[in-house]
Amino acid sequence: MTKIVTAAQMQELDRRTIVEARIPATTLMERAGLGVVSSLEKRFGSARGKTVTIVCGKGNNGGDGFVAARLLRRRHAKVHILALVSVSELSRDAATMYRQFVRGAGRSGVHVYTSKAQAQALLHDSDILVDALLGTGLSSAVTGRYADAIDSINEALRPVVAVDLPSGLHADSGTILGRAVRASLTVTFGLPKFGLYQNQGIDHAGEIEIVDIGIPPAYVDAVVSRTSLITRGAVQMYLPTRRSSSHKGTFGHAGIIAGSVGKTGAAALAARAALRVGAGLVTVAIPSSLNDVLEAQLVEAMTAPMPETKARTLARTALDRLVSFMSARTAVAIGPGLSTAPETVELIQALTKQLDRPAVLMQMR
Figure 1 (cartoon, helix red, strand yellow):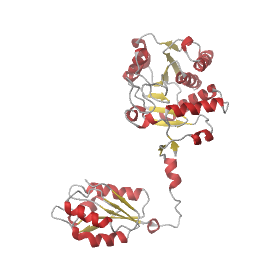
Figure 2 (figure 1 turned 180 degrees about the horizontal axis):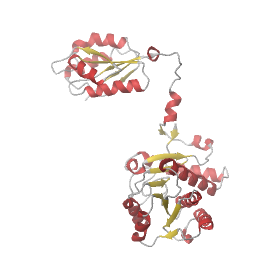
Figure 3 (figure 1 turned 60 degrees about the horizontal axis):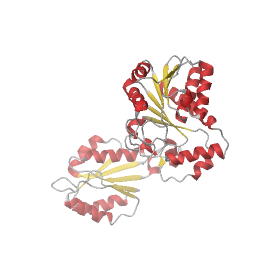
Figure 4 (figure 1 turned 90 degrees about the vertical axis):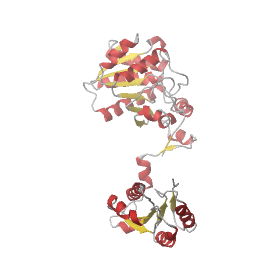
């Protein structure tokens, strides 16, 4: 699984890579810019013929944007850069990447921000926008021309690719610092940041693509993070290999004790989930009068009608049958849609004392 890190942890990883591994910051920028372009084309198709405007700030985030601009031009995109500052105000590495772009494209494609109206006109005439304004170091509210640029990006109603983090988001908390870019795609570098997965960051990040920029694995291993991103690849690593000779009986029989009047959907969803994660057989124990309702919702799972109360919840008299039901199953889930009827609660309390196999208990409401 991939570790999720704070801005400070990512900055330390960058520092170690540059200072200890002696990989130049400009090399990391080149890899980041290439990652942006590759991810952009993966999501939106070939850049050829498309008008792409890249909004660049003065720091390393802007430097990544200048690299992306140069590479997009090589792919025959119509590239415009909207720079929020003059070249004299750029950071050293960002200025290097700016000069490399100008050497190939000239200054005609570079527009230094002068007004919100100018920004809006440029952005509205674009097919795709790239947000390379502000990086992970932002800690105070966005104001002035940066705030105007973010508003203009959002008001353009064009697909937006955010570089590392949507500008205006706090990298750790995901809260909006004044205003924030609403991205269609966020291309984040090295490791994902906490702010992309919580609070408003969830709504503003769009699809998230993680790009390897060459940080040594040993440095990543040394980072202490108790939070990891569960990816498709990580899940697949934990799934056992299925032999060609296997059949439904090979993969266990899940028992689900669930349902009450008005809540058969919870029982059906739990049954489908058990089947999707690989259970060979699934049987749902349900109040008897609801059995037909549940069978109408399920095709692959089986049902087992049980004694019920007048309120159509599981009755205390179902205890012995449910104990036998559990003993015939490989694993058990108890709780989806059971309700908090007093007699049902009493039943479940007695039932859980006799659990002797893997089980998942869900809170009843």
